[in-house]
Length: 153
Image (cartoon, rainbow, N blue to C red):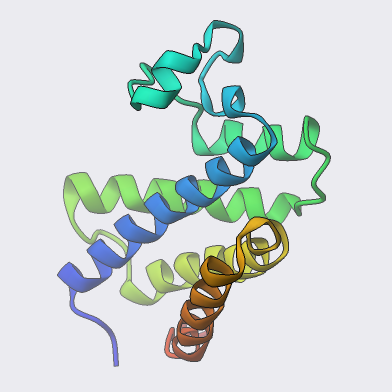
């Protein structure tokens, strides 16, 4: 069963936002300046107050994770994140213009990257209580991911 256009729109909007937050959280763990658009102009005051004039894009975050931090993230994951960003922009500004199952496929591609990313790169840095809570949430998400229908061929 395909979701209605509104539910799909907000699912994609939230998934894109979550992807950006998770990537930047991992950057921040290494060094807080890496989330700024230009780390050379970063100030601790701006970071601590949440008044970052401009933060790095999702694509820049991905690149910093691989080039600066040395994480082995697959190129196809970056492609999936970029494609989801395009879908998100179209959904936000024009509504559903693509086939719902194609949009779901884009979301599934990002989830296939994001779930292992969270497990491998974010969970290890959490305290016991936060980690247990995150693991419970991941179990719920993994249990529902199978509901995303692949596009018919």
